[in-house]
Image (cartoon, rainbow, N blue to C red):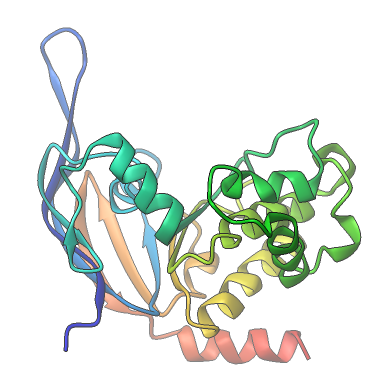
Amino acid sequence: MNNSIIQARNLSKVYGTGNGAEVVAIDNVSLEIQRGEYVAIMGASGSGKSTLMNILGCLDKPSSGSLLLDGAEVSQLDDEALARIRNQKIGFVFQSFNLLARTNALENVELPLIYSDRHDITKLAKDALLAVGLADRMHHQPGELSGGQQQRVAIARALVNDPEIIFADEPTGNLDTNSSLEIISLFSELNKSGRTIVLVTHEPDIAARAKRIIRIADGKIISDEVNPEFKKVSAEVGHENQ
């Protein structure tokens, strides 16, 4: 039985520059991600890692190639269909948090549910905030929260639709060391609970928390391997959390 939740075959993404030249951001990439995996995609700035994440997460379409999500071809779906898939199956966490400044934490987390047919959106949002340890901050606006707390709100917002996959693009990039450790530990807990995590980072210590590390350069995968440090790092995180 195939347990792949993501299957990418020969994905490429080419951008025009306006003067007739082309930039190849992703170049013939193939990979599979299994249900319940915790994968880090590593690369320097401009390597193509965020472009790859956007395609895998149905935020963007490839110029060529095939992308299967849960066994269904999605690479050529229209924007409306891709939006439905994102809303049903995928949660996103970004470096810049992307919270509405004049909206409190609870309302920010409710946003993905506003256009759904759910009638219990406030309860779902409260439960998501409770899951990330922010039950006592739900009526605070982003400006009243620390960077780590804002990222927890963003993670709660990603969780509120109960997605199968969470994509995180440099989620600790705007955080101090202690907040970064808290956030990355939270991703580890989410993975232990069964979520598939795909995390984009350029930081080796953040990638070290993943079970598998894919390295990308110039739009190509240059290595894809099980992280030999994973068990050691997991044990250290467990000790820290005791």
